[in-house]
Image (tube, rainbow, N blue to C red; front, side):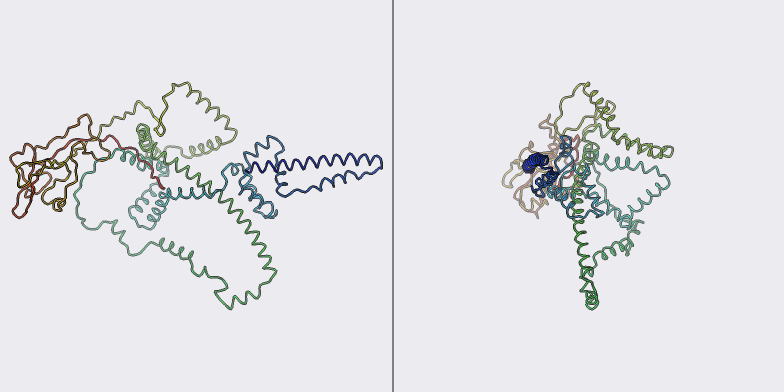
Length: 545
C-alpha cells in the first residue's frame, strides 16, 4: 500500500516538475526573444516567478526530497531506510516538533540514521508483548539467582553462606580458580544432571534415624533477629512507597500553598509550560525509540535463551552420547589443569592476546580473510563422501573410535499376583484376576467389597515407565516356588496368610478366623519376570503457553 501511494506521488510530482520545466523553458525562450527585440533583461526572473506559482503539499515535498538521485542510492535506501509508519512519525517529529538547538535532537538523529537501527524490525506491539510473554516464562533462573544472592547475604541459608565464604577465600588466595568455575559448572550443573536423568540410578531405601542434638548450622539459623540487609531493603521499599508522596503539593499545607500560589509570576508559568511541552515531546520521542530498542533486545535475549537451551539439553544433555562424553572428559581435564597447574600459566598474557585477537577479527578488513577461509573449508567438505540426509530433529553425529557407548542395560524385577477365588459353598478354585495387590483379609479394597485393580490376562501387564519387557519371550513369567521365604522377606502377617501342602506351586491362602466372616476365600501366588531399561529420552526444556 505504501509503495503504491509513493509511486502515485512520484508520478504526480514528476508531472508537475515536467510541466514546470516546460513552462519555464517556453517562457524563457519567449522572454529572451522579447529581450532581444525590446532590450528587456528581466525575463528570467519573470520566468522563475511563473515556475514558483505551482504549489506542493508538505507530504509531496517530503516525497520529492526523499527521492534517490541514482539507482545506487535507491538500493541503499531500500536497505537502510524503513517505511514503518512509526519511523515516519519520528522523522516528522524530529523535523518539525523538536527545535534545532535542542541538544537531544542530534542524538535522536544519530540513533535513527544508524544502519544497525534501520536494519532491525520496526516497533510492533504484537512482537513486544509476545517477547515479554516468552521472556517472563524463562526468567525463573534469573529470579532464583537473585533470591539466592539475598539468602547468602542475609544468612537465611547458612550452608550457602559458608560455602560462598570458602569459595571467596579460595579466590582471594588463588585468583586463577575463577577460570575453573565455568568448567566446574559445566560438569556438576549440566553434564552430570543430564547423565543421571537419562541413566537414573536406583535409590536405596534408608532407615530413618531420629535427630540427636542440634547441629551448628541449625544453631546459626535459629536467630530471632533478621539481617541488617533485610532492614535496608524494607526501608527502601517504604521510602519508594511513601503514601505522602501521592498527595498533591497544594493539599499538604493550606496556608503556605495559598501564599506561594499568590506570588507566582504569570510569565514564568508560560515559560515553564513551553519548556514542559518541548521536554514532553522529546521524552515521547525517546520513549518510542527506547521501546523499539527494548523490543529488539528482548528478541536477542530469546535467541540467546534458545541457544543456551540447545546447548544445555542437547549438546551437553546426552542427546548425543559420544559428544557429551567427550565434553565430560574435556571438562575434567580442563578443571584439573586449571586447579593444579593454573599458578604456572601466564593468564595476563593469554587474556590480553585473546582480547586483541578477538577484536582484530571483528575489524571489517578481516572479513575477506575469514570468508576465504570459510570457502576453503566448504570446498574440503564437498570433497568428502556425503552421508545420507538426516531427519529433522536428529542430533548430529560425533564419531570417535576411542569413545565406545556399550553400557549394559539396567535390569529390574517386576511382580504380579495371580488371584483365584472360591466360594464357601463350592470346592473349586476359579481365576479371579492379575493384580499388584496381595488382597489379604486386611486389604482396604477387600474390606470395602471392591475388586482390586488389575487385568484379566498377563499380556496386559505393562512394565514401569521407561522400562521394557523382553519381547523375545512372550510368556517369561516365573512362579515363586518359595512362598514361605517370600512372606518372611516381606514381613507379611502370618495370622492372615498361610502356606499349605501345595507350596511347590507357590499358592498362599487366607487363614481362616472365627471372628472374621467371609463368603469367598482367596489364594494368590507371586509371578515375576525381568524388565530392562537402556536409557531415557533426553530431557527437554519446559514449554510454557
